[in-house]
Length: 126
Image (cartoon, rainbow, N blue to C red):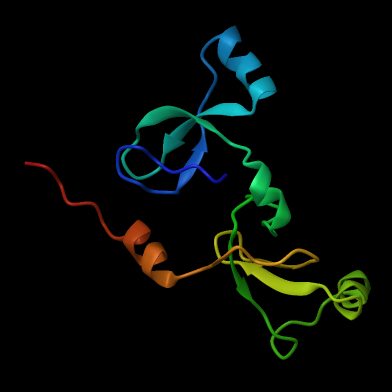
């Protein structure tokens, strides 16, 4: 999902539960009701950006900030090796912890700075 939270700017989002029939029909217009995992804000955002179809994304969580993996640390199966021979790129999603091969280029590089900020303990408001 290319969207980010309007309250805190976080990209740790998930699809919120639909509350009405109108919200169920919003998927036709490529808009979804999302909830931020950091600040719990609920908002509506477009989940498809046509320009992002040119870049690789995780097959599990659809994130686009990916790392690379090497053949020294992971032995791919036959189908993945075949795609590598054809010119595929080796990507790793740090959120899902899966390795995959994609034919598209990577849009954004994963950084642990965002990961550390996400996993910090929340300060209690007094």
